[in-house]
Length: 312
Length: 311
Ligand SMILES: [Zn+2]
Image 1 (cartoon, each protein chain N blue to C red):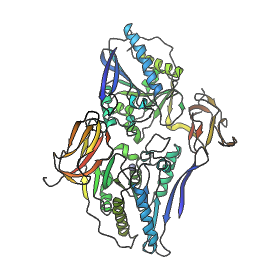
Image 2: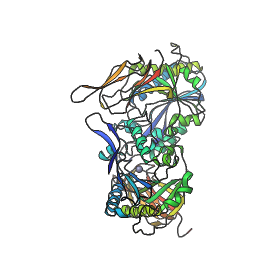
Image 3: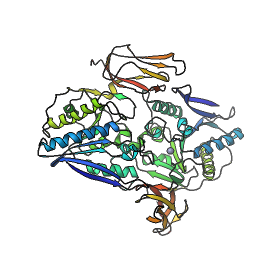
Image 4: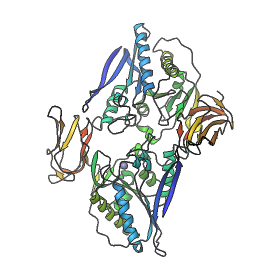
């Protein structure tokens, strides 16, 4: 059943609407739990679109196996998705930096408040992100160290490749996940794939994880596979940023193990044919982030390595 | 006056970005002024250019007291200005959400870090800022309520209002916030416009900075005494929200006194011109901020009013 969570009139004719689809169990099957699956806060991140479509299809096909309520929010930022805009069009702030929203704030802050109110009290919220157009990410859950104790055991059920426990920062207190977690509604943030694209295999991997988590919560009686065992990392991540400006040409595949000193790619100058910079791995480990977008400035992130591996 | 390059960034296929600073006087680092950090902050860059002109003249005439140094950085982000993009054109990030910066991080973190390195040891810092709420404020000095602030010093600018704002999580990465954390007395000055030049409020801003400096004995400058500023706490402002979307017809201006129930603006149906709604004032007071868009959505902060204040 489709519900309108918030509707706000735009200047000319149409309204901005955040909608959700609610799937409920068959009569007599409800064990009282609710999970929210959220995506599309950043309008250029589309990996969650496939996840919500395919998961909805599977749940609809086997409603008899469902024992709780599933709320699906495929487009938190419908104007952004519609116009290939990461943020909310005509609004300066990142939509994932304005939670818990404000009653007397801008339209986007008000919409954020209404959407968050709608999710509060759920037994689990999963906020699905897809990196950005620049970087490709291995399926991972990111957890603030402040809520790691409660969330890591749940994240381990999600069938992702790794769990990144990151340091707390004041600026992150305005994310949906932080705002929900700090008010007692558990929320896991998934990052996977790359902006403006859909990576079906990652989507299927996460769907298996979500069903596994739902089974663990007593909401799903269908068959599940044991989740892959994720690497849990406490910020043990090496960042590799460009020093030169130019065109980045990677020489390794995403999602492989790399050795310290191994070449990861070059920054090329097509005008002169020169190689402006050779990029090498600062440590052994799993290359879980790799730049997809070729144009780089000094500072542009090229890759991230989860430290550890055969030689350590 | 000494012009120096504070930071150089190499780029693919464009000339290098040079961030320029203009130094006046010699001695203790007293005041640093920063202008445009976003690509549409033309007014903010213009104010700095007028300040550079004035300070150059004053230095030439011996009107800068010895033992003090002043730095003006008119523009940090010409890269976005020259391509008409409000934020960093490559990735949409905002330099003023990257402080204190990180010299080994992403591009805009590096720019913020280099700028902060150059501007951080001054006793006073002024940022000519623009708000994320698009509209026209009453010219004012804004001070973040971090616990390190000194709102009394803000009165020395002689602008009509000083606004004290409680920082939200997204304020913690701005220049002003980090200046304060690093023990610089930081002030953000808001004038009427951003993308267009408003000569009167630009001159008012230049005068305000020189007045501030002369009151601290840093320059010799004779001018009108300005205002005895009214202190406004942001959370005490009354917001007037739009109940629907449409064409916005504004009937009052910032700085104007309005009465309880006075009509402040109208929302028109964009096709038929009929009045969909009228916005009325919930209080007697002075308009602190007004939207300057022709089109508004539902739930826009159309006006902010200082309650019970006569202008
Ligand atoms: Zn995202």
